[in-house]
Image (cartoon, rainbow, N blue to C red; front, side, top):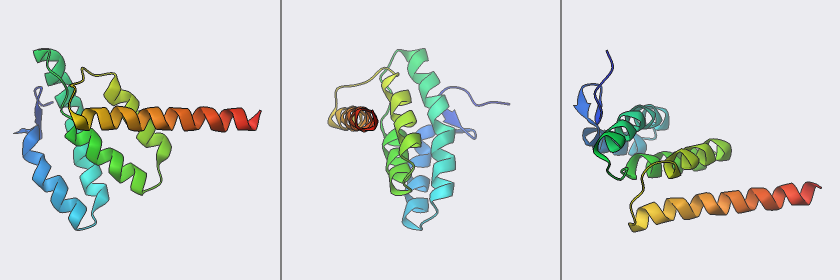
Length: 115
């Protein structure tokens, strides 16, 4: 049985914020990543259902984990997924959009350098 929009493992997605923080503090990045990957789809479904802006927190934290692990391609795919959602205009949203723009521009410069 899948969770309804806004819920992961039967609990509201925002419930998982503290657990993710605890995992990160303890260095259990795989566990934090698993939760974040799990909460993103129901948050996206809830955002679409309500016509509301997507919360930034799971994308922001997961992007930091991926960057720390040197998984730049995964981080870029995550941020591309983020910008495909309905976005707000808060500073955290803008920071994630800016991060993707920097990554895209850096990738384009790297491609030109290989020609």
